Amino acid sequence: MQVFISETNEMKFLELIDHKTGENWVTGFIGNQGALIDGQFSERDGYGYYVADAETFEWWDNVVSDFQSLDDYIDDLKIEHGSNAVSDAINAFDCCDIEDMPRGLRKHLDDWF
Image (cartoon, rainbow, N blue to C red):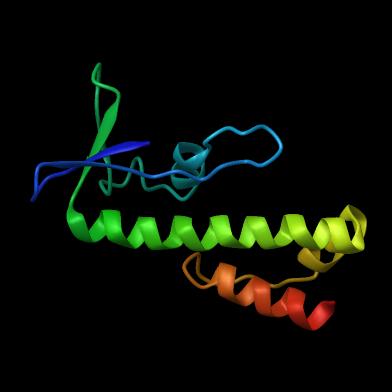
């Protein structure tokens, strides 16, 4: 997802890779949180990029990075313990705010396994 930073006139990139498909699904991830319709990002129709302020971009960059690390960790756990066991552990996790979820779920998984 290309993002033009309004204050600095920089083009930056957000990416969240699905290990099974190799696809970057960050736009869907951010969209599912409502950030594409609540003003955090505005799409530049016909140009293929979004515009955001630096603070918004940095916040999402940190969240996306934390989720990518969590996805990598979950993939490793699936190899070690099996997909069903990891899915059971994830389903037993009671969530929190999105920015706290990767750290919270990782701790939960560490305790579980």
